[in-house]
Image (cartoon, rainbow, N blue to C red; front, top):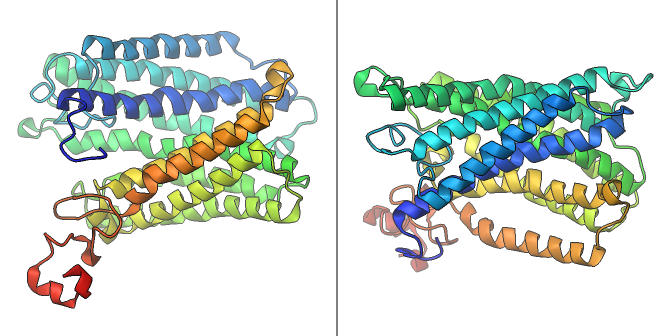
Length: 426
């Protein structure tokens, strides 16, 4: 992607690699890692010996491990999926994706999602029924509240994508026309099913990280978390509102104006409870005396990156801007700023902070500082230039200064209108 017409990978291999990248990160990394933190940390936080159903946890793990390994093996046999991590029809029907590539994605993701639901049931029951005597819901750690909200979100959101994968596999295997418009189907139905899971999933990934940051920050600053009750309410509100903006990435799919307007309003409204959490963290930093160690650095990096990702998300919620920026590198940048900032940086902070619980030893502060610096600088160098949305007509480039106002490059912008540009632009 650094240069045009790059031949490092063939077109077929590139499609497989970027599809596997998105699929593995979203389905095989992000959800399992937040559930893993919950399974590891919650018993100690709740005063329980263990979560209530160890066999269910084992089933969820082995379903995930076996399904994930089988999914990875497709790369070595040339059978990796190549329709994008969102697998939109008609690109993934039998006409445009013959062979077994898409089938491996559909069957593998179905098993992985069942694993995630099993893990969510385990977490919900564990939080509600295995707390130590005297630990009421109001006294629960914020991370437990975050995982409780996330557990219910998984139970409600994930069946939609399981249903979608089942329908698409039936269409591919038995020629049932669920998503074929020429035979009465509708490809937008897949988008609804997928994004009813896909956009709440962003908050399923973020909320556990927010719970961990709330707990770590209070300890690192040596004060109580500012607005603890408001943060708990905001966790629930974010989880609820996330289901109202499933069409956040469907504004160019041809939906009605009323529908897109409602989803646009929900996309802006969800920034309010998210901002409550951000201001609570800033207030905690302001009141306390910060210990500058590796977890603190990753939390500060999280605040910078995630807030920028959230701001670009509010921009994408504005319909006219979305119609210009959709399918451009701006969306790629927004997506990664939210996910890397909202999960990866808090996850590294949590690993450094809670590692002594595993082996009794702290991780190296020197190596941790270098790791943070390389990650923070490298990520911003890679994705910050992409915030320039690119030309809305030819989608050219994401280099700052390449795109003029009105969202067009010099080549596509009407020549008579260039007279109002500065001399350097003409």
